Length: 206
Image 1 (tube, helix red, strand yellow):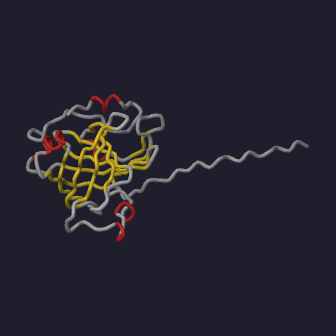
Image 2 (spheres, one colour):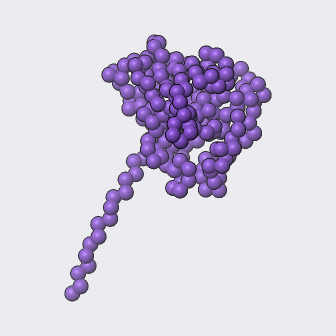
């Protein structure tokens, strides 16, 4: 429930990312009155394109970087690397993180909505197995996150998998990240910025 690492990695005088406010557990948080916790998936063009899955648990957004993005195919398992907790304010963040800053690159809100853990979310997180239902604009139905092992960087690796239900479908019938590429907030897409090399021309001296 600590946002120390989030703060430590960011210079808020430079990055447009939100500064965290006070952390409230759901029992005392103003937006928790009868509302299910929120989730967000942010599409992030950093050094490599990936998707950040964030689930609201105990007053923060628990976060996983999913390199290939979520899938609706129950036969496909996606690597999900756990990253630092993010503040709830981050759920609506879109923008460009400047070069030289942690996570530099563009980010959009690819999907958002509510999520419902099958069991207590905090305990499931500690146990390394979270089964849940998403109610988003692009993702819906039952999913599971399973912790596997720490990576060489010390971050825990998990597997994200769609469970077989009425919202599941094989990728042969369509890949959700390719069918729906834009932001659910602004309608924007990530801009592909390619810097073309400048051709040097020789100056003729007459």
